[in-house]
Image (tube, rainbow, N blue to C red; front, side, top):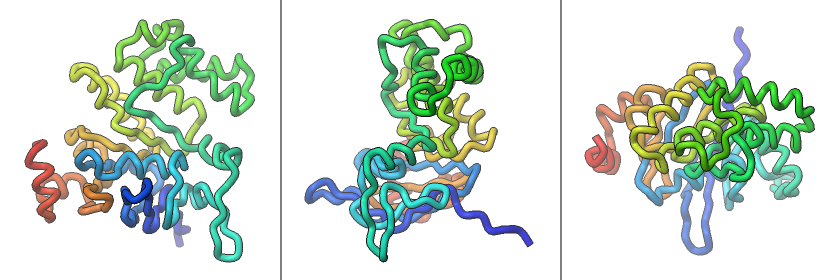
Length: 257
């Protein structure tokens, strides 16, 4: 008999509002270990907000989010949820890598220095150990020769690949990508998607908010179309993209495909 493994990510009726505006209206989904989930949908549909809830950059107003079996951002006592301290929430966040639309690199630090910062400061790795690992990761994203370059000397695609290496330096169990190619010139998109393909092939669990439908079709194990703060339709990417069942999905895809 095989042991039942819990999903890497489980969302149960997650709700999030900003004041009177309800942005997430009860999101429930699961991502198994080693799976890639792509979230697609129009701007304002709640995709990025959901991603930020997964690593507690945004506090959920209702529902529960689990990563690797651990309740994110809260502790449960006597059936009641109590928000974690910022310090404990930051500890949880260590295991979740996030790559943003804008690269958020330290402009006054080289590519190598950007990658070694968190392992040294947060994980207390020695500089030598962190540097060796950072060089390996920069090589993995195709930037071994740019270790000493500053962000201003790099293209957008190169900066985003440094950002991916920086996230990987913390050895995350889950990677979140928030429209990682949308700020890039079209000719630079492929080099970032190439790194993400390699990550997916290596077995990294990933949630990717993207407009890159070809990438979603090819790489995702699961696709969810969000609109108006709900998951309208989800399933096998090729099936959802080729034969969407819901009118809202059809309308959205007809503008893209």
